[in-house]
Image: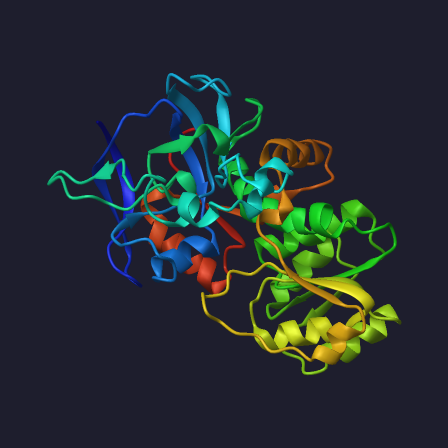
Length: 369
């Protein structure tokens, strides 16, 4: 067993408490990572609020970055000393995984949100021997050390600061991938992004990278709209206005080619779908609470529009994360502008900054990069 420090959420809606716990040594297919930094994502907050099936108390966190400490006997992908980003896990054997769609793996709920390994065991215990839920996204990186799977570690260059790279494993990967992997727009096409947080602003940067002609960012916060303009949006709209559909149609002339929603607000989604051109596509990328319904006008869909869900930007992390890093190096994808740093013991303050909108992407730092 290894003594580590972790942020534990005790009960739904409660604060995180930083404490020392025990972590088991890696199994043959596992990788022990010393965490340098970890981003805070709305999915973490949803799990802490009790929206996911894992039992509390739990160690969460799923945007970790760090240095490989040790590996199980069967691991060949990485070695001690490698710098890695931690991402979502997938089984590698179902049809989705075999066809290059690991974010739609049949085992996604078990491997990422059950609070245990696939066999029901947990590597996390308290001094009393009491079990803790962990293995969140097969990493639980709100801790000084993370136990990951060989499949959900991505080796990254050692000359880049690890305190920037963690969000590439989920939020930034999702936002950029929504455009570059799921939409794949032709140069000149139009896209609207609803919700200009870290996901939405990553979509804006990706849309500029893809050569979109009209890029509209919709958000309630004036500061976020201003940042969207700096990062590539051609137009911005206040999400509170009641004529979003009409204004989007005015801007585009014929309606949107693409829209992506991160708000999970049903009224906003309806406005987005109505603003599409007859063959337009709306992606739903927000973290809606389970069981939340949505009602759409079937007539709009019959005209040829597509509405589909999207997870993790339709990405293959081993391919897409290195691509995003190269775009960052070339100055084409300045995701560092989204990040605000907090000390690990400031996790509750970082969460408040995330919820208030004061931080676009809060990142907790644990060690020197």
